[in-house]
Length: 114
Length: 116
Image 1 (cartoon, each protein chain N blue to C red):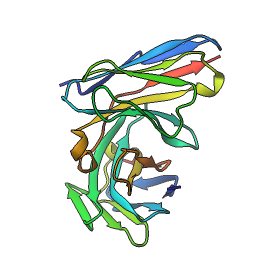
Image 2: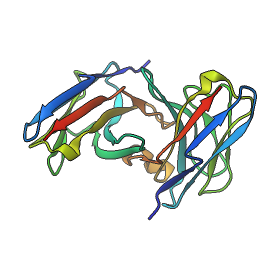
Image 3: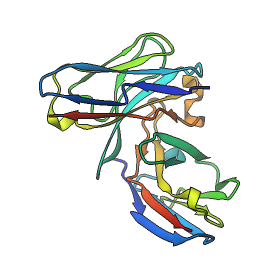
């Protein structure tokens, strides 16, 4: 059974810092990995999706990397801002030919202090 | 552009009561999903519908039923609510089934359900 772990569970940084969030998964047979952002009381917003054949994806100040063989992904946030404060979740799509079952980590709660 | 809309946003039920959570998407997506989010458990898939007219069990289907009413709407029903079903429920949708592995899922804002 696929398990996804995110470390740390919570992170507090001053504005302007570069930071890295970590995601690890136990079964390396995945189709893709997705990073989401969740604001308090809100749903999930997709940030980046990395296919299993890709090594990284970039969107603005965000960069996500994937090392499928070691079962790891990182989300790098450059020049953090207070507006980046949210919970960040990673999710993997399993190596199945059918079904659409994302397995989620529990998330990292990020606070960026002005 | 509404995206994925869930109703109600909040609900309190007594044990044994029934209710239906509604979800609608306006993105012409074929696939729709219901998740629950619990502290320490993350998000877990309850049911999904790969396309209109089909539904399948996810990781935690017991105590729930679903209906894919049409392409836009996917409802989740609790027939006899139990305190263990206290949770935040999220509906999501994604692109056509044969392309779903390449497409991100879009989420609604959630329904916060308390069972007393």
